[in-house]
Image (cartoon, rainbow, N blue to C red; front, side, top):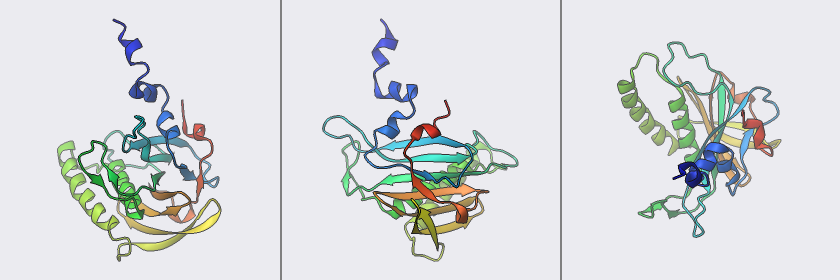
Length: 216
């Protein structure tokens, strides 16, 4: 039996053949850093949401990276320089993908949580082994969730950055791991995280050509 023939048309096979498939399936615009960023760009990950009646499973969010890609393991001295933009679709309350419950409406807090957890996943403490790192990640993720749920709290400050050339307010915080910010943009919610790239100097823009991020 020709297994390759049977699997070639599956969604997973199509994504493996073309990493842009998930991005093109979105029903919202993607955002990345604007032309002020002249460095490398790369594709991140796409998170799918509820499957529609016709079997389509559009993304709920996704990431586009700038600079150095995430490390594959702990590094004693991590010198990577990066900024990652998280685009989150505006969604109301809806059924979960497995149809067993409901999901809350997305908000700027959703973008802040995804950005905060993304930053944690991208920073390997060099002095922790894999087992201890999971405990660290669980603890830090819980903290990031609490912080994201309180964007008006003292852990956050205000920061105005350009979105498609127009000033837009964001909520911003720094930590020993890097920085995280969250706000709104036309049609979507935006989160971002980075390290060794100044958040004060970035701007966001609608991505009209995703192939710029495809390094194949």
